[in-house]
Image (cartoon, rainbow, N blue to C red):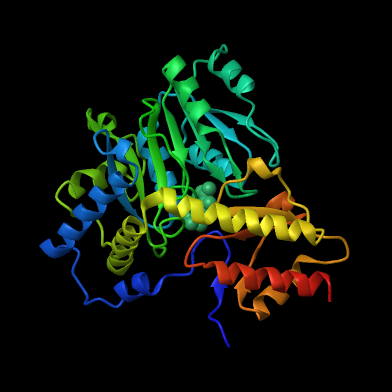
Amino acid sequence: MTHPTLLLNPGPVTLTTRVRSALAREDQCHREPEFANLILDIKKRLTEIYPEAINSYDAVLVNGSGTCAVEAMLATLLPAKSTTLVITNGVYGERMTRMIQLHDKPMRRLQFGWSDPIDLVRVEEELTGEEKITHMVAVHNETTTGRLNDIDKLAALGQKYNIPLLLDAVSSFGGEALDFSAQSLLAVAATANKCLHGVPGISFVMVQKSAFATAESHARSLYLDLLGYYKEQQQGYSPFTSPVHACFALHEAILELEDGGGWQKRHAHYSRLSSWLRRELSQLGIKTWLKEDEYSSMISSFCIPDGITYKILHQACRQAGFVIYAGQGELKKSIFRIANMGNLRDEDMARLITVFQKILQP
Ligand SMILES: *Cc1c(COP(=O)(O)O)cnc(C)c1O
């Protein structure tokens, strides 16, 4: 039996037939009311995924991949007269550092090793230090390693010192718990094509309603101005051409998530698949890069075993119909990664495990 290639990279994901079918819908103009109604429904349903968000957050859709939502969030919500503490322990935290630099906003970086947790004692030292910190920025699931950072504790520190937190939850929204009742959580950037199982092209920022109360944007960019999107989207419209088909897919993907029992059910499915994979690979002598309880549910990182290269692993998986993912930057030579988002069933995971058995015990 031949199988279609399954994507085990951290987005884009393998689509379900239901979401793929939405891509073939009749074309629509983004300035017509039927499309505006679709956008309004997407916005409403995005805030309902985490019910604590319904009353206090607005979902603002942005054209582009997850990076676009993250950059629009930082560009628009960080004032020129602010000092942001950027907390990093991987590629995506460091990418935000670069964005804040490019947008010329004052910041302090608190850098941790790519394999290390965020040390909350050091965060608190920074928040109470000489330099007045006004905002905090962090990554929820650091996709670099699959580490789930302790956002609740960061939000609690934000609450204690009255410092708003802006979060990159691009690889966790829809698959992990996110406490939208935390008052310090000012904004959360996410995307259609990771845990929500849509296609790339549309992303979004969940923004506390109070953030736009003053209706002041700090963006030094036209296209990345979240406030511009926010204003026109109140009626379902967008300042620029929308990726119409990506929106069809996102809408269908949200309905499918709802029908499947919401983020909790998806989280349970992801957790079962990923912990099973880690258990089986460790029996084959492939060590996990982090400790078991440090992982998020949707991606795992493994040490490349002695005597084998990433290229060999990638090729063998590719031939069997799976796309696995390399490490990034300084971890490129040490680890490989396997994500388990998208349309991935138990039997697919069982088949992947047999591929690794064949590579390691030929
Ligand atoms: C995927 C991802 C992004 C966005 O990357 P894109 O290439 O723009 O999709 C941002 N942050 C994290 C943590 C991610 O996993």
